[in-house]
Length: 213
Image (cartoon, rainbow, N blue to C red):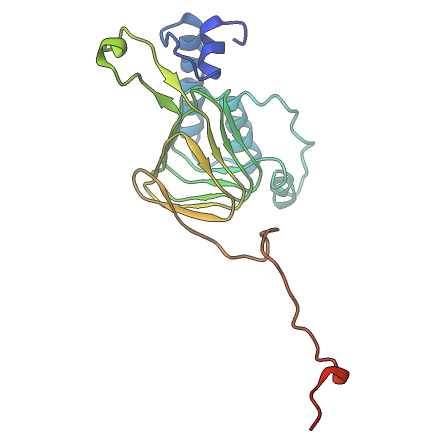
C-alpha cells in the first residue's frame, strides 16, 4: 500500500486520484473489518480489541490469556482504546488512537491523512471526523472525475468532545471541551493534570517581616 503513488500523495495532503486500485482495495478491506466489528454482538474485551486492531491493521501480538475474565480485560487498558459500535472508518491505516480513549457509538472517521487521537479522550455519540477535502473550484473538482485531497486531524490528550460534533482538519489542544457543528473549542478545562497550570502554595508569613505594633 505504501508503494502506491496515489497513496503517498494522499498522505502528503496533495491532490490525488481517489479511484486508484490500491486505495479502493484498502477501503474495501477496512469496510469489511468495520462490518465484522459492528456485527460481532456481545464479545469479550479481548475479542473486541482483536476486531478493532483488524480495522486499523495493528499487528501487535495480543497478551497471553488470563483465566480471570476481569484481569484479562484489564490487560488492554494501557494498550488500546474502548470502542463502541457501530463505527465507520475510511482507511484505518491512517488512524491512531491512544489507550484510555473512548470512541462512542455511531462514529465516522475519514482518515484520508493521519487522524491522531490522544489518551483519555471522551467522545459523545454521533461524532464525525473528516480529514478529507475537495478542491473548491468546480472545474478542478469535476464531480467524481476530479482529484481529492486531505489534511491531518490531531486531537490531543484529555479532550472532551460532545455528541454530534463534526471535526474538520486541524488541531484540538489538550485539556479542552469541544462542541458544535462544525466543532469549535468551547473552553479550556482547568485541571491539576495540565502541566502548564501553575500550582502555587500559599506563602507563610515571615514573623520578622510583620509590621511593628
